[in-house]
Image (cartoon, rainbow, N blue to C red; front, top):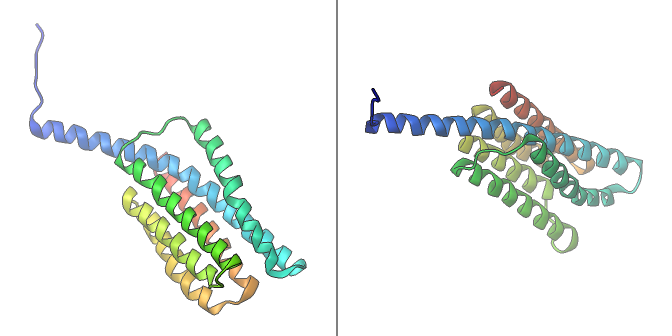
Length: 191
């Protein structure tokens, strides 16, 4: 005897909520790897530029920052292929543009600061990096990401105003470490 059971509205909503939560967790797991990747790149590039700055050449070594997105996007592409597909929903569709917008603003403002209008670029980038991370945390409903972004954006802005020259690069080292730690926390939360 076959039993034909229709779902109630409440059961349907519960099923939809469970599916959204499962896809959010899958997106978080995937995001953790990307936080770690970009955190490592940010840490390595900031330290290399700092040491090259002090070894000779000064701020001209900041031009190496333009190589980071090239390497980073190539590695992120490989990472995405290795990890396999991630569910697509509204959360996933928001994260890419959030970080893409951060990258676009960072590259454009850096180029403008180098070639046309000098500005306090470290201050600007550390604030928008913190914003991008915090907004990602809000979208993912994840407090460690929100808090790490706030610490980086607000603390970094204060530190960028107090530090001078090459020492400001340590803000990006801190930012990279925060991204890695955030990625590790998320990875262990959603094993």
